[in-house]
Picture 1 (cartoon, helix red, strand yellow):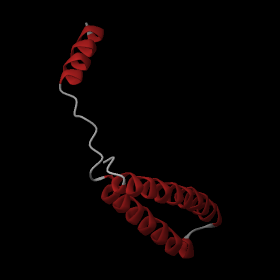
Picture 2 (cartoon, one colour):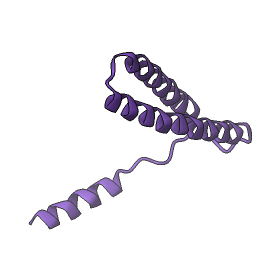
Picture 3 (cartoon, one colour):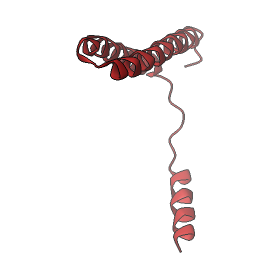
Picture 4 (tube, one colour):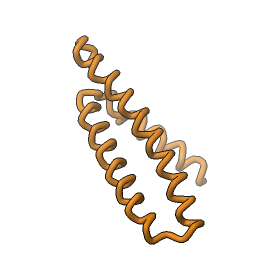
Length: 88
């Protein structure tokens, strides 16, 4: 019964799926970058109060955040280029 309900929900969702709307991607990505940069900064401040183990975890997470920010900025450039070309 659970499997049939899942199929019904999936079928219902596919009938009402939204078309791909990229018109606000640049702004959305910009917001994500800003939030991630803020979290990175807050984490750097918290390093002052962290024990060595926490400190290492924070540093590793900040490395991942930095990589994410770099990727998002590249994606934002791509979206801006697509917008200029009229693809969006």
